[in-house]
Length: 272
Image (cartoon, rainbow, N blue to C red; front, side):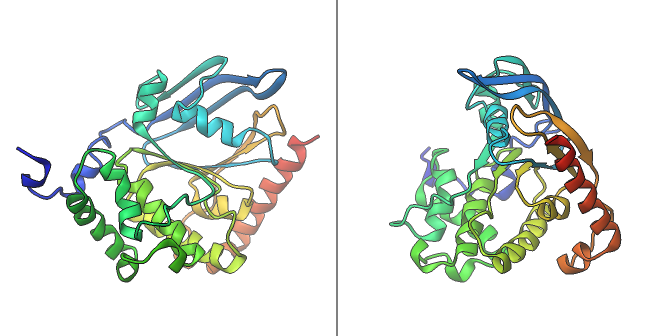
């Protein structure tokens, strides 16, 4: 039986690896150096199933190195990392989908073909992959741009396509490395609201790296504050709940503003 002769893939098939416990992340006493440069210093971190955990800290402190270590792209010098119970690099990589700062869309492909690459890489035909991707394009307001090339999309739309490609990989853990860093302030705020909605509709265990404390507190269930390199966690904060659906109402709430100041103070204390 060929791939094209099978019944179209349903959405649950796309997240078949999202079994109970598949998204639990545990980092225990992890050290990582590059030559003489110490980057991670006995770091401990956990993320529960479908929890969104933010990672904030100074530039160059090791946030991206931590994501790469969780994903199995690099191994720790000491300590242990597990994702869904898998401790070896290959097992962790099978459970993680990584989204870097740049969208990395192929300019010669349409938006939907770029997003569907995650499914093509899993052996699906172009026809089946496009058919499986279209419901997400419709759900998240991109259906009318499905056939557009990346150059025809705004920065925010390109990031949406990149995020849908990450979702379509069907992995239980999402690793988002400053996905909105290159966007202007207005578009960034819009994308924060969009991402909050997307993660609400399609829950995944998520580690989000950002320099923006407000962004972390708005999007995440918990925020880990990292020290300057070599990184260690100096504080973990839980944003006020419930958070309003309206981003502006959330970030202007006095309780949210107080938590933002606590996060900034933790960053200042960690740098001393």
